[in-house]
Length: 503
Image 1: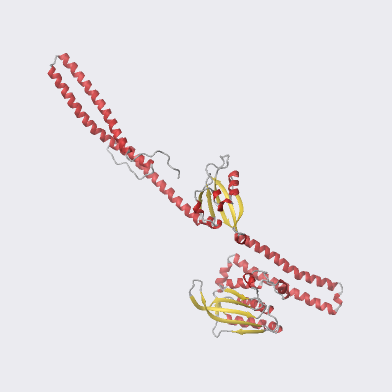
Image 2: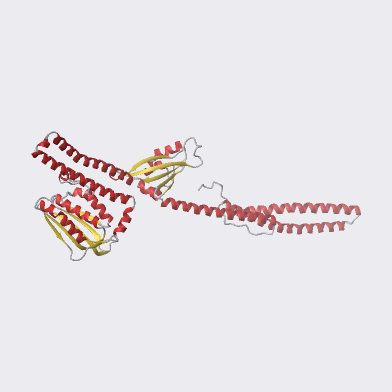
């Protein structure tokens, strides 16, 4: 709000003006009355002298004129005060409105002219008050809208001072900008890195976009910024001193997804290239004459078959993961979960099916595959195919990374769990897959569910792993409303646990 630079008058100024107004009206009245009295006296004296009237009669006329003059002066003073009162009221109300007190009103009066002016001032005060209230309400609504926006909003005036910032802007720039309101943006560290953006917007007087990075390298926030000059001086000032509004949009997740997609494409290309290169090499060797050597051709064909199997598994895992993620990105994950919640599946039957499917593979490696089932049903809201794939991937991994003569335990039981709001609940199904395998170093546990992440790349490929199995498990468990965790240490085996609510 612009400061009022007009001189401030004391509160008694209206009374002072009123006394001066009374005096002026009274003096004007006195001048008229005295003038008329003098004229009347002169006329009477001239008339008396012409008619030969006595001196006593003349004196009597003078006495009467003086008495009339006194009465007129008293009546004039009363009349002057009566006239000055409504005029002073007009001055008082006008002065109050000048100071911003538009609720003041002029009192009614029987003087028509003054009453008309007073009514005009009263209507003016009501209209101005109504418009100010409307502007205040609109301003409050605008501030509420800007404060609730997901995008960050920053306004800089033409002198570079911070006019406004919402909560999102403070969160993006990691600084409470409300503490710096009214200060020059160049002195605010959080906004100082936007100086070039503000300068370009003022110079070009058009929309300017930039991407800035906030925070340390290990915790970057990527922000897309747009700056647009505003105000009456836009397009007219030659020094570029326009106000600027800046819109901030957090694109950190977008950049992360782009990086994940790039890594995914690179990893898929590499994973496909390796077996295809091996297959091509074996085929070229066979075509060069090794096909006629029974000892060599069978060996090479077995390697080709193994690589084809690896490609098949990789493509199947990629398709499964792509299908799951496409549903999540399209917003179909909630609908899928809603459909699954209408299905009732017993984890015990899933475990028996999976154990039967992998029993021969475990026996081939001299592994002992143990299954422990709860006596009570472990019925959850889920989908049989998804649950079979979850447990199958976990058991398959244990078989791959457990040396010969090792052991694998699959345990299905009901346990006491803790809900998200901290209340205890006993209805939780816990499915754990524990082995005596090579284990996972602690530093890799946080990333073990990432796509194509391998602790030992060479060992994983040699065992036919695609690097997608655990990522698929994570997405499927999340889609079923459950949780998956891992406990492991290098050389000490691993334990993967899936938890879901019982119904």
